Length: 208
Length: 166
Image 1 (spheres, rainbow over the protein chains, first blue to last red):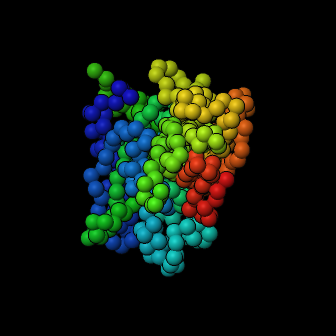
Image 2: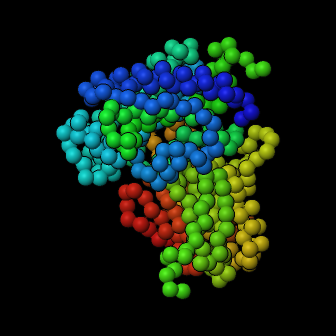
Image 3: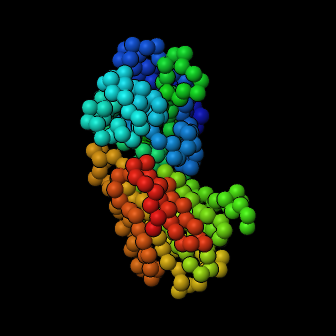
């Protein structure tokens, strides 16, 4: 991935910032709470480091997946750790789940998580595509509650065909004033390798 | 031999990686989704190797340097050679495999990479005349697998079911 330079990553970081900012606003409207986000990252990481970025390969998370198509292709995940996923569903449906894995047997809980993912991904991508001047469509949301490593593997397929690294754009959204241990919701966006090249052509950024 | 647990050394295998463990070492890979973990072992030599493969075939590799541990065919070839080098006997090597799940249903199911990985692993084992002793593949759950060369047990943990030993 010699192709990816630090100024490319700076542009993507700004894109993630703009996308996630809009998603944070949507989330704040949904939950009627103040939501803050960390400074988004755009980094090139070896596959093995990616699950560590989110708390380890075995960390169980509720994850809504979207396949992105159109002028920019890629994979997008909205991932919630155990406690946040349960709190979220309690806020939305009034149902309290003892264990995160019980959520997948409840159709209402599943569809509410998918719908939240859908709204947030929509807000994120609307701003992202405006900023990057590309049209992006996203698939219907698909939910899995499982180990982070197993979930993220699904998003690495396109990169695994070209190398040992992936370009990852990530942002964390969380309630304001929540404890520092609380991790909040993670956005993970992995643009396909070919899309990476296309994006910078459309932005008029040339390789020197 | 007092506290075995305290001393046990677990060899970690990462995504697109392979390694060897000799008893009393254990060998583990975490959070397998569509990837497949292939274990080759010699029961009596108490030696085992594990690979965490991501894709079916190294022929898919475009150009340039290739990480052979990433593909079913090349990973199994390398793992076999490495295991023999570490004392396993050629005609005694068997295999156990796990993984190859389909984590999400809706999107990009056309790719079906999990089942294709499993198929490619089985084909390579057959071609190399390695007996497949047990498998836990498919489904839609992630797996963490741990192999003990001392007992030849492969234990499989998922978030939805009890631990399973094959």
